[in-house]
Length: 112
Length: 111
Image (cartoon, rainbow over all chains, first blue to last red; front, side, top):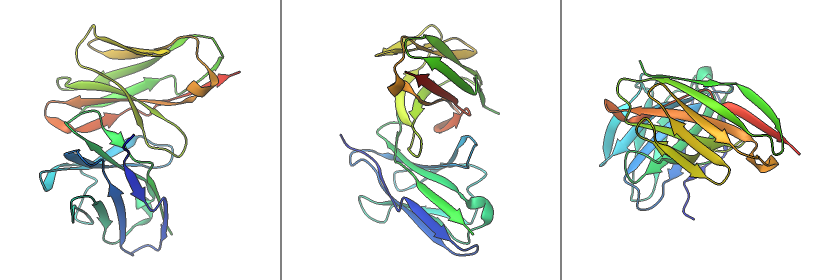
């Protein structure tokens, strides 16, 4: 069964450093998303991407964040200058339509 | 602002003991209500989508129902492998690509 693949599974970085989280969505999907889950808290929407541009974003998704689909298969989330409060599990998801999202297993980001 | 509240936060059942999980929601026009299952260290796994009050969906031991203010996930004769966190999320017409999640119900089924 097709699945969303995320790498790395764990990322440790120093505060102020840039990180790039990578995702390979399911191949025939058209919508791509990033969500995050801080330990013990709700899963939160960050951004959605459709037709090669950001279609929706939350208040969390400020200028420190960016997304790219550099080729036909990868979807990346870049955090330009990480803060302690960026520590969370980051989930990539994809969907054919604007529903029934398929989530990856996540990247656990730890900012020290 | 769209909000989702799930109860209880945690539920421990014996194998075979049926129960229900609750999801109360406030949304500016419901486009869809979603149930997901999340295992530790994994991403949410899609279970059901409900669109209108009165709708029901079933999958194995799970049945999801929807009213205008809440949704229930009924678990019939659960097995230990049903142990997981169950997440509810809503989608509004004004933000169709954004799911707003509840905090989840952590379900444990003891053999």
